[in-house]
Image (tube, rainbow, N blue to C red):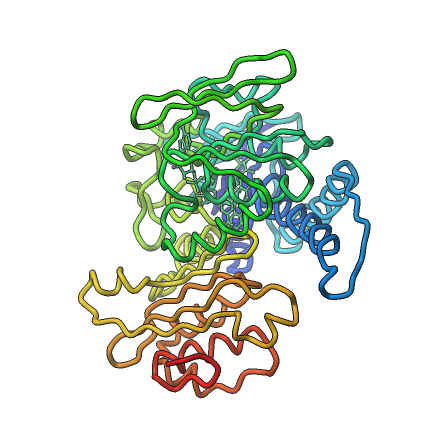
Amino acid sequence: MSDSETDALVIGAGPGGYVAAIRAGQLGCDVTLVEKEAYGGVCLNHGCIPSKALISATDLAERAGSAAEMGVDAEVSTDLGRMVEWKEGIVDQLTGGVEQLCRANGVELVEGRAGFVDPTTVRVDGGADAPDRIDFETAIVATGSRPIQLPGFDFGDWPVWSSRDALSAETVPDRLLVVGAGYIGMELSTVYAKLGSEVTVVEALDDVLPGYEDDVAAVVRDRAAELGISFNFGEAADGWTETDDGIRVTTETDDGETPAYDADRVLVAVGREPVTDTLGLANAGLETDADGFLPTDRQGRTAVDHIHAIGDVAGEPMLAHAASKEGIVAAHAAAGDPIDVGDWIVPAAVFTDPEIGTVGMTADEAAEVGFDPVVGEMPFAASGRALTTGEADGFVRVVAAEDGALLGAQVVGPEASELVAELAFAIRQRATLSDLAETIHVHPTLSEAVMEAAENALGQAIHTTN
Ligand code: FAD
Ligand code: NAD
């Protein structure tokens, strides 16, 4: 097809790119969104949504099958094929919704792979209906990330799974070896343990979920062990061989030992890397940093002023909600209507059993930057609502400055991913411990634990010792 022109070109339709395109359309820009694979990106198709669907389904099964204490006796069986089919239905509904929303906001959709020809033009390798070249005034690069391929573990080989394979498998491996106990390793180990796999995890570092505090990670690790997941820390996976009845994965310890594990499949989840290699960055005058990410300023501008980068391709945190917010900021900047970014507060959640939800600083981080932090905690074991759900592991912790201004919070326990929203809002609003403690929370709810953690920091908790 012929060439075309646009005010704002967005490359990649993940939660960064499609949100940026819709906002640019709302701001009156003439917007074109180029996507090479599927609307919704990794998040909707192979990441957040598929994983949360399988987490919910397997959690339901596990809970139903272990609720005898509540007077519930159930014989539960699971069918991964049907679970995956159900998950695909949700994905189709959401990706169809993204396409419709883009069109409703005047976004021109182009199917194909975009690469820069020069600083104001991309070439598109696409179908017959796609333009060959698009000239643009501003561009937003939102090409996301892909799983890091570990040497010795080729994703093309039959026993080696990426997270994408694990989320679309139709049969449950009897023995699953998981490499990496980060976000993906922990979420998907839990899914497969609840489906009945014998799950073994090897992790190069000395605990699960690097970056999370020891006592937070410990709650998740202990529950995972209860589910039958076995952990091997301080071991880096370095290869696999075929055996008579499956595969043997070898690892290497810091002391040079080489343990081996028999398995049927190996899920490699050792991090994700940005997708920039087919973008022709040099043609646009762009360079990545040493880790392959596109560096940007707070408005998402790259070193080439009219080209923005957002989401996973622009670096940590590699989270969908951060990508979307960066998309909104970049769309405003591209439309010539920049917004004040203010404090950049990004909550994070790990959808393990139980969940983790964190925002802002830990007590150690607060101390490192010069605060003398005030800390309060409320264990879920003392929450009436947590006990009535049968899930009372974990706690809410709040961290505040000397004057009570909230700096951060760590929640590990039931619905932590939801509970952290109130805490993120509180930090954004510069709320204090007293603001949280004086807000009346519905009884009996898990959110009362947020109020009580603040009361505890003030020495005023009723349901835990101060
Ligand atoms: P992506 O979603 O990666 O989208 C990029 C898009 O760009 C893709 O559709 C790709 O096809 C397209 N593209 C790439 N190159 C080109 C090109 N040259 N031309 C045209 N199109 C191109 N995050 C959370 O916040 N919560 C979660 O619960 C969560 N769970 C996850 C679970 C898993 C298993 C995985 C893998 C990730 C998870 N994440 C989660 C991370 C989240 O998926 C990413 O942070 C998010 O998708 C990043 O959005 P993005 O828009 O930057 O990129
Ligand atoms: P990760 O960085 O969270 O964890 C990777 C783990 O692999 C680390 O603990 C690392 O020490 C370990 N590792 C590296 N090489 C190893 C080796 N050779 N042998 C053994 N262990 C090794 O990465 P991930 O789990 O792949 O997830 C990628 C990203 O996706 C996350 O950082 C996050 O941004 C995003 N994500 C988010 C969510 C969520 O928000 N709930 C869920 C899934 C993924």
